[in-house]
Image 1 (cartoon, rainbow, N blue to C red):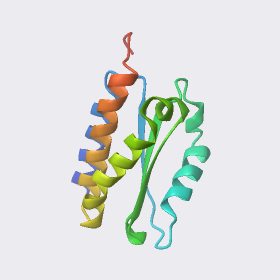
Image 2: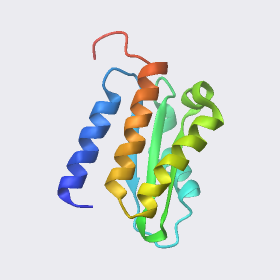
Image 3: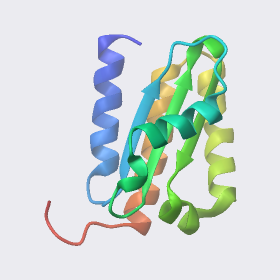
Length: 127
């Protein structure tokens, strides 16, 4: 991704997190043989994301060289949205990644996660 892509992704994350107690984290890994889902779960644990107060963190992991990606959410987020949400999000993000449009795929998924986080976990006080 270019510096401009990185900036667009950062802005999308900031926008997604605005007005919610939720958090969106993005990881891009260089491995050509990555199991994206296993790696996403490992990254989630290693970063201590399960320790977020509201348990409503989502992690998007992209392994461009392996041509794979995964999106995982913490317990409270998953309990609110269920399996169908994740399956739909992945299905709709997949074409971006398949075309090599990494930044656009991340931004699409981040925007959708932001809408969902604001709907289910609105920030009720400043901060």
